[in-house]
Length: 389
Image (cartoon, rainbow, N blue to C red; front, side, top):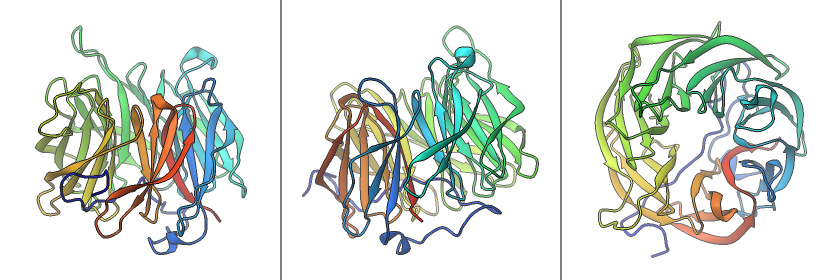
């Protein structure tokens, strides 16, 4: 069996580039349509001697041919990038650097026909250390997770893709000496009526009511659900039908499953499951990314330290997870990974070995086989995909 799962493996992952919008968006390509043409792969990095900003590759989904990453735009520490539902704009969170106020910035770019990016404008995030951006389905509102000061804020998106400041901000409290807030990731539910946020410092999943027409957010009732103490929820995702929500817990190396009430916004915990093999005896490390397969049948997460991808099957009726197995990322510190829209090719970013590695996904068994394509790139930490026009 290839180096993927030791157990029976039938999983594929996809990294969503955002839910296609209600009024701005083109119709999203189907899996079959995504197998033709060229797919652009945008890569966020931590900048330094081996990276200068946001990079782009070109993927031929029919053959798996992947071009060498090229610099698409210079920017300091664009650790997260996201693409507008209409495919014309890209937004990046500059997590730190010599920006005005010293707290980072969010930058807007237009996407050229050649895949290169042209800067539009930048805005301060109303917080410090922006590490994640989530754009709503209409493409008018961006939620910013500010890890540095533990706040959530929003920015407004104009028709020309530029960003405007918003007055909305939610600054989370400090709970005692140990629990300092660290907002880390957010997502809009499939109805676009709620936004849900991971706070890795407070062990909370925070829920907001969202008005897409005005871009306003307000605390839900109840305003949050708690995970087990000292789990540190980091990233989350919804099931396709919105009935379940999953978060990956950075410190406890686990995934917590919730039932989500799409009318009230209430989260109810139904399961917590380890991301490690049952017989694991090494240094645990921490988790990072969490991604749902487009079929909704499988869920994947990344383990930093063991440097592997964990996969689960998803019970469509109960929402509960069953461990399938693990695969090596062939590098050090897998912070992020992604799958092209056709579901055939996986790209893994190894932050501390400065590499990105491609795998072929068996469409029948979903086993991963290295294609032999590996590129050197400084600290790759985010992947987003866009079908070239």
